[in-house]
Image 1 (cartoon, helix red, strand yellow):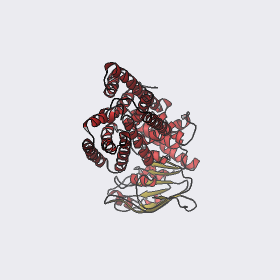
Image 2 (cartoon, chains in turn brown, purple):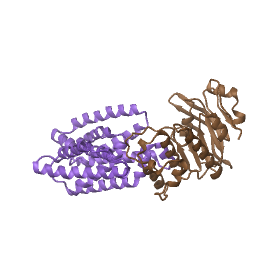
Image 3 (cartoon, rainbow over the protein chains, first blue to last red):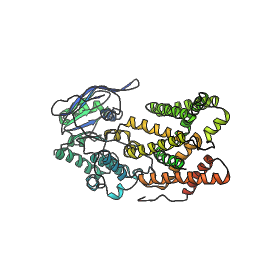
Image 4 (cartoon, one colour):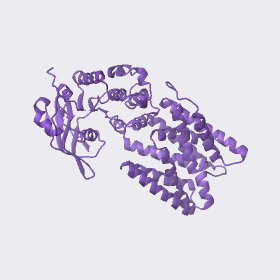
Length: 239
Length: 251
């Protein structure tokens, strides 16, 4: 389980020899990597490679062997990929954000700034969460994470279900939070162009092999073919 | 009547989260667990409510432990274990006592029963009011709640124990089977009528109290047991709610 030991200076997270098994099936095997403070780590890999399992193990939701060390004073904001919500659950977006603020002992009431940041109108936040679209709820989850004033964000495909302009808006927001507020970001993405643009390091997971390093040097066409088992086309922005 | 109203408030609050947690059907099998406790307590000449409380607390612990496993396994295990509890309860409890335990009995409450009722109901209400924010997060996503600093497993256990105690509260008035109904029906009605959390909690508590007070009044006039009438009033209110439109915004 997560060990409250001291991590090396400059790192926010150190993972060493982490393995996760579901009954007899090994999902993650002997995974080791470090995440420097204020950096962005992209986690990529085909479906079923264990990307979500890794994030859930990091927050202590799944049992694992090996060690996970978070730096002291870490405040994690976690944005899960998809939630199975009943459409008529009587909890509004504002109820949900208020609950987070109350647990963090913060004054509630005004969420306008955080809602503006993620691009949700207040009228939408006042709706029951089950009636929100996938994209709106995804943005609400990011707002929820931000209400907790995190210094680490774990994002499981944060733009899944969000429309094209919304994706760009959220990608820019995450980049801005990382650059301006020094928030460390770990994000799962299937879009390699976003990985090249936003990540300082990339961790690739697959049954075939794992890799860890800066995207431009780690993600060679041969390696991507090996990980995904097929040719992968992508566009790298120069800026 | 004070004890009955306190019990109704606790049932309204605990039921709201039970419905949101999608455990509406759990009240019924869990209530069966009370029966062996009642039988054993009566055989040992201990107050039956004490036996019921101990067994219900144990049943909640069992559900909590099984929740860690796959959902299908939990449901199967609950189905088997709690049906077995009903069988053991039927064997260990005499006919009249069994009917009273299932559907409630007549007779005035003793001072110790009144004290038990009011204190347990107050403890449940305080627990829900203090934990409602953590419970809301846990309902939406246990993982998200966990990263917000909520001890999800402990909160889940406390909630299940509070749920089990609420069933025990209704033992003398409604019986364990009908108490399950009073926990769930007003909350289901409230879910239909409310738009947000506070509306859900207020409506559920109000309907639960109205069902209890009105049920007692009607039962007294008709010289009938209160339990079934209370549940029928709650059901009638639910049926009436089918004609109401859910509010689109605000409560």
